[in-house]
Length: 600
Image (tube, rainbow, N blue to C red; front, side):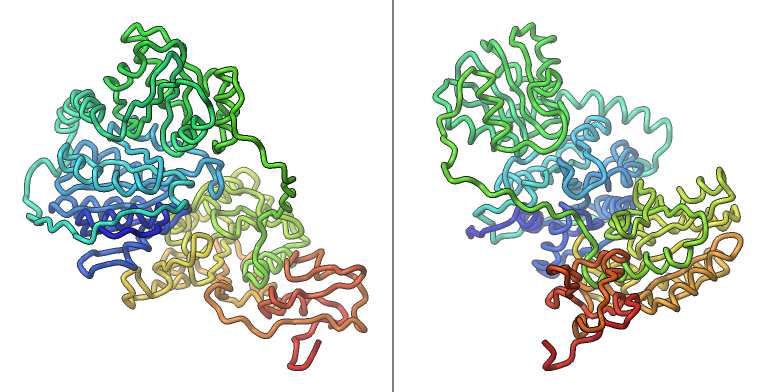
């Protein structure tokens, strides 16, 4: 064993390697992305790793490997599980041979997601076990336990770390040995073909097994009871870590239950915990899953304690918990204040920084070109999930709708059918295009819907950390692959007018949009320019003050964070400038010029 300082996601990845995982698939999404990337970076050479085109595909590829007896890991964030839910619900009935762990990172807050979802509900809905780690150390342990349990019960198992577990760091003892597990290969059997009769039979078996699995997990070290007294606190995930730390500041005898396996609910352990208690306070993220489990136990066992938590309004029903919230809630619950004193040092208020497109981002140029090209038309601009969602902010204001990945193209079609007198323009990124954009394009062509699709191709999956995708010509295994050309794909789908254009050529970009928008039926413009994170910056620009008339169009039209005001002067913060020259094209007096050596 070797001690290493690891982020939670890194711990999960190294644990999967130690557990003998053979195939790892997924789709990038914060806070889960680093798991697959860490496996790839530490690949001993016999693990297949891929970024799949979406989560449904990732789960199906991993399922195929599990049919052979290989251990597989699938990674995604909570909204990705929505995409993967179709194969998941059927896979529960089919089962697996090799251990299969589906890592779904939940994002309470939400910090970087369009929804707050609790994957523990999905576990209950799908009738599969879920592990809910409270620390990176426990995430390491639970990963191996999840693989073992999956093989024991012949079903996939969910591992549900939340943002704080995924991205916090701990010193963890990591095994240097890797399990060597034989892969028997795929054996033809009727069990692998889902038929209604088989589904009915397997559903009965799944339901009958839930209590057995729950009893098995009740005895797990992941569901310990500590302390004693008449007052109880139950907690799960990172909320348990907060509760444990908060309790150290109270001189009170409190019984504590940690629920590390939320489903099937560890009823025996819960009944043991409730015995002799007067009241119980529950902390968890996000929904009252443990709270409801305890309430059900009180009904079945006749236990007297009153259960308090999200349902009673004692714990916030939305957003992340933290140590301060948990400490104050416990203090009110037991009628005492914590003994830890606040620091006498006044904490300065942090500056508010709304999310903004990076300086030099090609999406800013794309949005501005579309805005200029359609200025005299009545338009609705439908957006999608990615960096470009930030196009909704002032001064661009070019994203009117955003639902989920791939929906920009299809929402536009619904709007157009309802209001054909309005032009509908759908924005989508290159990675999202491959994820779920193509079916929407096909639908528009098939039904001859009058929309224009703007593909923002910046040659990477930018928002989640510059991961490769089918349009980059590179895989996660560092292999050079056939690059899927978006232009050819759109043409193959039947879009007749498809125009490629560099968005930083403002005149050309405006012309391209006008041409595409004038077409009746589906049309498309592909704006091609690399993300600043993968491109070498050009020399920065500067403002020649003697030419500047302080019209501030460079600020009020594009909102680039590199352009600032200092007193009455418009300046360019040169360390931020990537030399894209969009502002120089907008300036009416040509006061913005590229900096030359020796210029101040």
